[in-house]
Each structure stands twice: as structure tokens, then as C-alpha cells.
Length: 145
Image 1: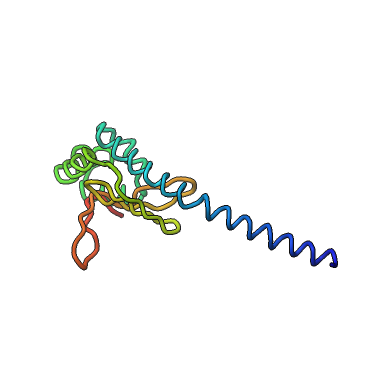
Image 2: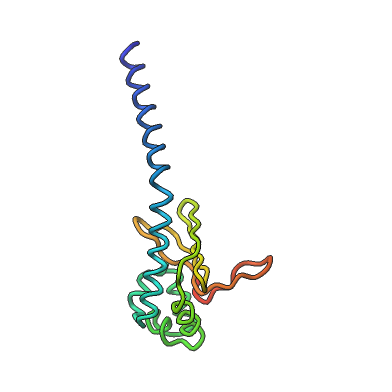
């Protein structure tokens, strides 16, 4: 076998092995990370730590919240008369029931909420929270981009 063919075969085999290994390790790790992001977000909400909770939001979601609440994100999450109670209620029972990951998007279903996330660099960030499912229509979320 010529050396260029051996080299090409080795590259293909290594690429296939890498893809297989990534496929085996990826989804479970990604789901666990998404679950942790939601757990951490609701722990910050429960602790009334608006700064920490805002740091876990997609910047566009934080900006939309600030615009709607006419207050800084950290304040709105813990004091806004519409958003704060909705989040506090969900934080009280944020036990994760299901995690669905598709590429860079995730949906985490807790006992009291459906949270949407996106992958940003090496972490998951919340794009929408305090969401209500509506038949044949998009979710209605208190916090969203």
C-alpha cells in the first residue's frame, strides 16, 4: 500500500473513531450540563441573587427583561411584580424531570417549568424561563429574548 494511501486511511479511521467517541460521551455530558445550568439558575433565583441569575441569561433575554420591567435585570428578576413571583414559584420546585438536547439548543423540563437554553462557548445559558405551554402555539415565557 503506498504511504499516501496509508496516511489517508489513518486519517479517516482516526476521524471515525473521534466521531464515535464524541457521540458516546457528548449527549450525556451535554444534558448534564444543561440540567446544571437550570438548577444553578433557579438556585440563584431562590437565593434572591439577581446578579448571579442574570449572568446565566442570554444577553438578549436580560435586555428584553430590563426593557419590559423598566429596571436592571438583577432587580427585575427578584422584584418585578410579574416576573419575580413567577420565577420564585418555579424555583420552589425546580426538580429536573427531562432534558432534551439538539445541537446547541436544549429544553429542560422541571416539575414546575420548561426552560430553554443555548450553548455559548463551553456553557449553557438560559434563553427563556418561566414558560407555559400553549396548545398549538409557542410557549409563553416571562423571561425570553
